[in-house]
Length: 164
Image 1: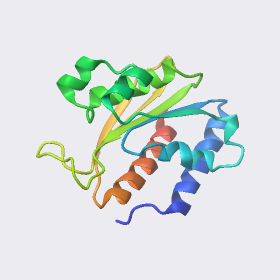
Image 2: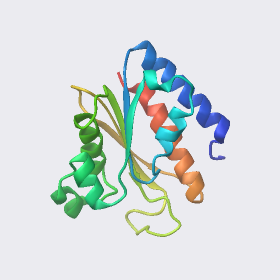
Image 3: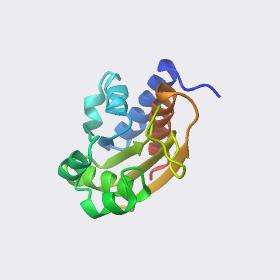
Image 4: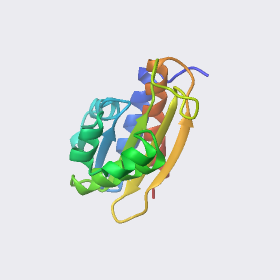
């Protein structure tokens, strides 16, 4: 299966924006392995200021703690690429923004950095609606760094559709 191209990502972002605007929702993104690519994709949509609040690219442990409120204990016990970290990232994004829905991603895009239990392509994505419970899912994407990141952006946007 081929990684989504620019046109597919643009379509997903447009569809996401249409749904968010219809529900009067505002989106915040908290991104590690995608480095702001989700925010870039959604802000490529004209009129996205009506439904996009802000994005935070938090790569380092220190940034995850300072910008998103991820607890040092979480990072020490579970690592940056974990369900626990993704959930704290998505929750922190809502706390530190005026948004009503959030998506957070953390993973290993490669080509290095993988381990036996967390190989390259392992990505955790979490979604949350303000006042609701977070949802998180692990993905194991195939391909090079670009493909892993493109797949992550696509799944992050698709997951927002399921967030009620």
